[in-house]
Image (cartoon, rainbow, N blue to C red):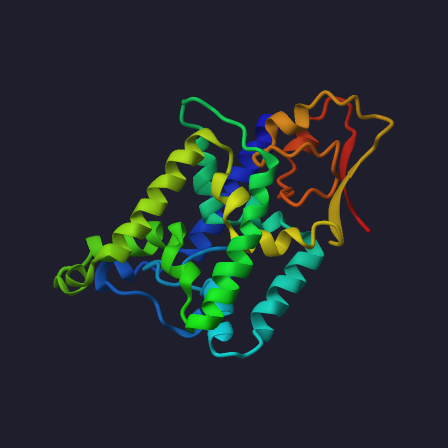
Amino acid sequence: MYGNRVKLKRTVQIIATIIQNSYIPAFFAGGIYQGVLKRACTPILNCWGCPLAWYSCPMGGLQHFIGLRLFPFYVAGLFGTVGMVVGRMTCGWICPFGFFQDLLYKIKSFKMKLPKVFSYFKYVVLVGVAGVIAYITAEPWFCKLCPDGALIAGIPLVLADTTGDLRALVGWHYYMKIAILLGIILFSISIKRFFCRTFCPVGAIYSIFNRFSVWRLKVDKDKCIACESCQMVCPMHVGIYRHQHDIDCIRCLDCVKICPTKAIKHEVR
């Protein structure tokens, strides 16, 4: 049963990745899609500059309006609506970069646990980089450093550059972004969802709603035997039996499937 549920999640992750990144003409014409769909944002991290992307990234939109000194009504509404309904569930089921990290962790290597204190650094990234610095400089600095952008936009666009125009612009900033991506990849091989837990500003926003969302997890304390099976299988290493509304819970439901006493359930309140 557990294996079948995991396959279901993987299938959803693959389908979600394809839906968001399937602009096939990019393979033949080059460049990126800039049609009407780019006016809409996905509810997760997915770079606007990816040649295959149909939609915009909400972090890019958020920083754009912050740089213009305007309130980001659309992006705030998107985050608020999704967050109030499912909390961080989008991170667990439809985020391509989260899926990428899940695959990286499957690589056989030395595995490490991440101290809980590091999970709060994503709020520094959200407020400091995507907020304050974007406001002061009127530049989307998180996008300039984003490893997802390097993976699905920066590298493909430079490799596909037949004229040499883009390659001529490559400098220290590009290499710094690649270095950040490589660091995230290395840590993600040994630490479950390293980027999601420590740096992702989208996850930081949704985590605020975990306690208040309509759909959430509930632990029956009478049935729970504190065996820690939920924490061992959790991609975010969350001990849901201790904290039902943990900021890092991405509602992937792996804990629901693995619990030997069926103490964990999802509910709509």
